[in-house]
Length: 296
Image 1: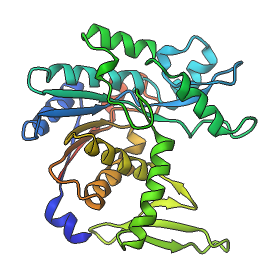
Image 2 (image 1 turned 90 degrees about the vertical axis):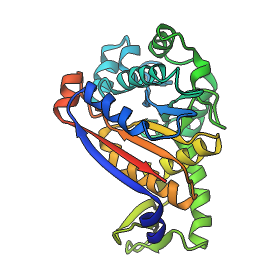
Image 3 (image 1 turned 135 degrees about the vertical axis):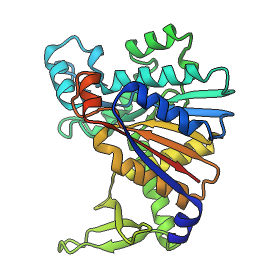
Image 4 (image 1 turned 120 degrees about the vertical axis):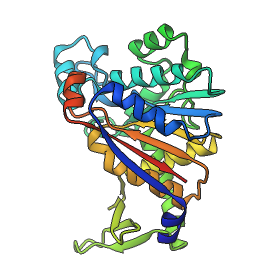
């Protein structure tokens, strides 16, 4: 695997301090990419339990009428979901005359804040996904203002409007078993006395990156599977707007996807504008935003 990393995958990282610098950086990275098609992942949100109803709802600040819900979402993710959806729509709109096939990708965290008491989490998730027949109102409005509609959203094989994280987790857990047998991932028993195991990836620096621990798949495994699904759908260029706290595992997931699945000819640009409770663009860019690019 180390040889594959060194010889076929290039990586570059830079910091930007404004939205203008962010767009300029993305444009520079896309200038050398194959732009017959483009996928932009933005608008990523978590599911929260709605007070009073017990239902799961999108954790998008602008969609909430309850002060309690607004405070919960503001403190956790801030303006990130709505802001990155706007960034994504602006980006594909700006490339409309260049790119033949541009799609938005909506990744949904459908596990982190799903209640574990009462009804099974799997049942709550299933009800949400079954009822998720339209995008959040604010997302729909942004699409309409750009002259787009839900047809601009890349469907997954699980849902017509979204890539649910739990689905990606399960897919990667199955794939990991195969990769362990092939010697591409390493499975180790932890010193916990319970014979718990973890599945790790040995990177080019000789460091172990944990993908599955005690049966739980981290963000890296989900992103690995998401990149594989995007490639399977025929797309080779993707821009990802990820929460800042997820930047490291997202970058790991991209590297592993390109390597393990042998996904050649791909360009993946990752940026992390907020996602940890920032409530304004000034606050987001005052912390600086990282732009990372991977090419295979």
